[in-house]
Length: 358
Image (cartoon, rainbow, N blue to C red):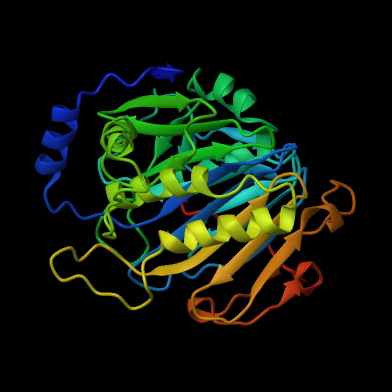
């Protein structure tokens, strides 16, 4: 495992240009995550979910005290949820995005270069990749707390095919908290790599995060007011998000700050229905989430509905004794319309079952 903290950018301009040329027309499922660092502890995390087909997302309320398994067979990690959470699922078999009552956010994005360690009976306990983000949300209040545990590598990530597809799920994890701290966790050539620093505000897809930073250093030298890359490729979205999330006003009004953050995540979204024949894996934005860490409001916006709605974590009973698992049915392609505060629209439901070795 490698841990990167506060490392200075050492990439030269020529190396950055060379990397851009070497990447060529690399295709990747397109998602973007960014963190706004505002005044008066006004921290906001936003992400887009871009996928070529319906990712079958619904929202769930998950209270404290749920007993969990890594769903990797007999050699699975076990834990009990310390914190309640609100999560967005993928295919109702994974947590692909979510926040917990302590103000921690976790986001999974595609990274085709991911290579996970081998897993067997003599490995460290297994954790299905479908529950990777949930493990973080269940167990930690801050990014620093999560990193201190993850760097000890208490589990082995176990991946499987994307539901309905003949390809392995290859993801990386971002975390952010109410202090504005951030961490990016990747598996590169079978080794865990953690980038931990408040300045790591943006994550997209390919290439690996270290190379994304090198590419972004090139665009910083040009300056965002002079020129920004405009395609839907991951490296271009990384550059735009990095510029705009720091160029927008640091407004003390939380409503205006929220509006600014929404404008940035929309700017790096992919138009619905867009098909790029030469890069077939660049996909339409299906939905966006925005989390106001201070007010603990989790916003959801589908590409197919006219309204943005939110879930108020402060109004949810997450207690072990009386808290209930609840579900908000978003419909096929997330086309059900909700408006304003949708916290009371959740219905009691059974917990979803994480994809794993059952």
